[in-house]
Length: 297
Image 1: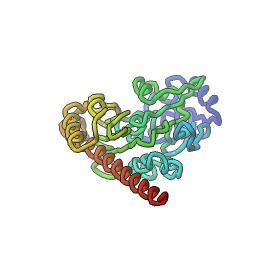
Image 2: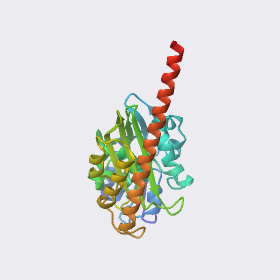
Image 3: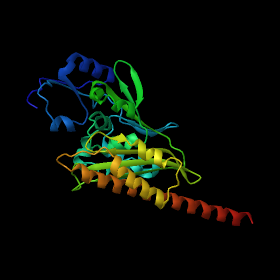
Image 4: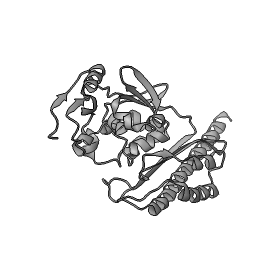
């Protein structure tokens, strides 16, 4: 980081925005500093450290799970509130993100602003229809999906909060990723969120990341699953479909052909996991109903 000449550590979001604006194209925001340590653009001469300006609280509200952008990935991973949300999907995913030392430094805001194509956090949040609040003189809230359409400008606003909307009780989520080693950058990841109403899939969101492009929803998969029953025939049919429709390309980590194989396997694993969880939930409800019936008699 030999190019850095100015280092700001503001105590408020307003001050951080003022420093970022003053620095123009030569200024960069810093949260946990993970990306800055890895990538050192020569044009960046000013760092604006927002660690002391951002909220790091984690809470459950009437709207859903609210996470301050200053919270580290470790804080999210270890939060009992997060562990109880959507059967702990964030906990199971974050355990496989990077290494413990990097999770101790990386923040939620930085993980979203970096927009890495292989990001597990972005893939999961996109599947969960996340809302992002940012500050750029005024506060604005948009879906992560809309923000990713203009991701080149993500680091020119200060991300302050992440909101995961409260799902219905019949909503299930599953995540899968493919790596060579535990701390390696993934070759592909995928996340699925859907609601089962009377056995049929509704409100389906299926996302693939590391294709090697940034995470994106796969419309053809969502359309095929919507209204269908989550049985073996449906899972196999969608698995075949995604093998030809996922937008995979070659890069140094994997070939496009191999990524299509992984996409099919990941989708099948996610859907089978959801089907098994739904079956267990249905069995538990039936058992509870029988117990209630016995008590009434």
